[in-house]
Image 1 (cartoon, rainbow, N blue to C red):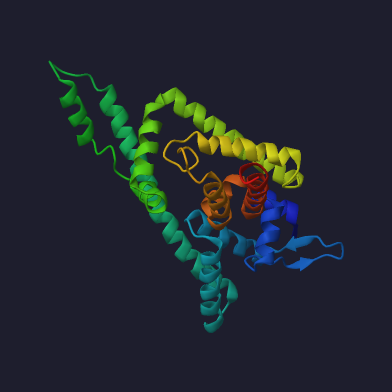
Image 2: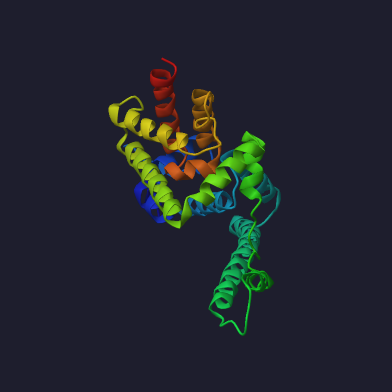
Length: 277
């Protein structure tokens, strides 16, 4: 069977733009293109798309995914036998990686469950706050968590002082403040994705209003060049805009690489019009 690009996108949880981009860069080629220009995908194409999405979920960028697929394809071509069997071997390797990730998540779930149980456990006798905290620590409450991942990345990109300031600000927001900030970020990302799906021009009033909101959001986070007096706001915004496209983790916030490219182009136009005018 073959499936249209819309059916494939809906089933895979991606956008048609993403599938067209994957085709353009050679990651997932449709089984055929109709006379009307519509792309269609057969079972083999769907299996390859699944491999791409699995690698993306594991944190690989599109260039790295292409390299992995090319190596796997070469290995399959060199081995005699049924092509379906070769695909099954490749997916088995992916399955091993997913099971490793499953184990990590299971460890996180277990640590949170133990923490909840410890918090609900009745205290016996006179127990100090310090002792109670030590009891929580004994529950392995941090098992499965990697707290240094983003800290190290931020410090490498913008310095330890930037991380420290942002961390103090984030902790000082309190639970309600953090929830409101996350709601605001989620709404901004959703509005960007919707504008990209509508095919807005990056220089249109709607896109430029989103760019203004985006820059205001960046200026609200202490420790960044956008928030510091005398900071290179324009350079910082342009650098982030490029990173949204280059880093698949950020591109996912805007519906994929094409959505991120729309955000980048809109921010570029805003910087030239408002910050460098």
